[in-house]
Length: 300
Image 1 (cartoon, rainbow, N blue to C red):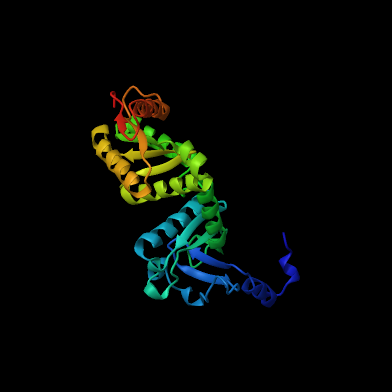
Image 2: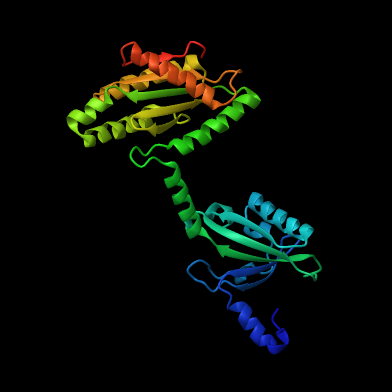
């Protein structure tokens, strides 16, 4: 702990003013009592005009209420409260289209003060701009969940989504169906025309999935030439025409055909793996029956 007696009041004020991140004194009722720092002009504008105003003067009601709730949490805990939050132009009154195009992310470090300010309990709120790290975090997450060749979700992301929808089904009986399909005679495409042709078949198939499926559907590349489409809130009889339309569009736009197996979640399922097994069995029957077709599992 620094010995503040070594510094004059003027020196302490200068030190506080030099802080790169802004530090606000906010009262329990949401009034800006003081502002220190914020000298890093890459991220912050002059906020001195905030002093004396309330959160409700500056922010839209929902955002102002959120800040006041965080102040209350910090005061109740009597310890450091750390939060991440975003501020968009629409959150700040009087900014509108003049504000930044993208939301700005902050880490707030909220520390209760031991003495009252303006007759109220108060906190020190240090706001650090973490937008760059948030963007990097989002990019890394996207890369970890995206298949590099097709641009669709990868196996990892698919399994996460299947788990979430199975839990919805187990709890609320929310229906979901799954289509598993692969490209017919894909090995011949690779052997006769080369791996670039095989890659092209995969990327065009993925493009057709993005264009032809519903916004709520979730296509993923399982691996090789095998794809999975999760259809939330969709029973098997509703999923079949969607799968058939996809089969026809892929044939029209790629020149290659697909074989697919369709299944839906049932009350006896212990996990999403039971559903995948039924869809995979139906895919095997589609191949056995001559390919270029969608087979719905009889129990679906």
